[in-house]
Length: 128
Image (cartoon, rainbow, N blue to C red; front, side, top):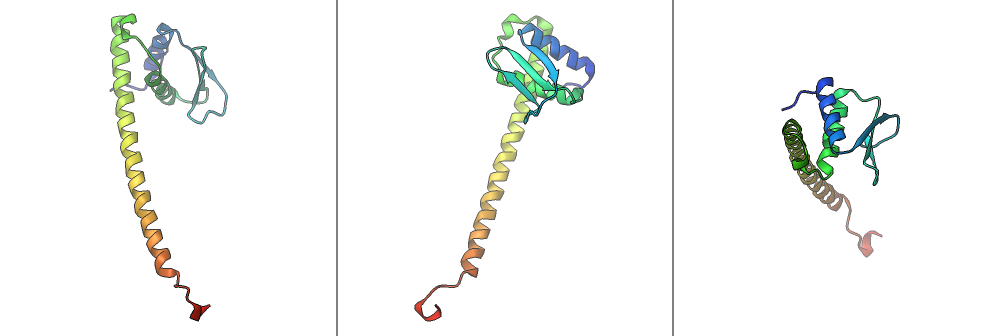
């Protein structure tokens, strides 16, 4: 696991510099906390985030961009490997949560449907 410190943030920023990404911390209404400027290799992150949130945003960005680990130095390769492990673990966790939410939603939908069937009286010519 990685530690969410300013020192780690600095290392991650240097890794992004190595893969030729510019990181900018600015104000904005980003739904995910960050924005990637298309075809410019610029990542804009909410400047009000603390070190942990910034690192998490950078990990998510790193997991979604193509990186050739062979072009990185040995220390950077090790950091990249750690960060991708964290990203993959979070993805698995989110997938499991999504699956669980879908099951709960399906159960709730079935229960609601059954209640509606029970509560809705049958319409016949006699009770109209």
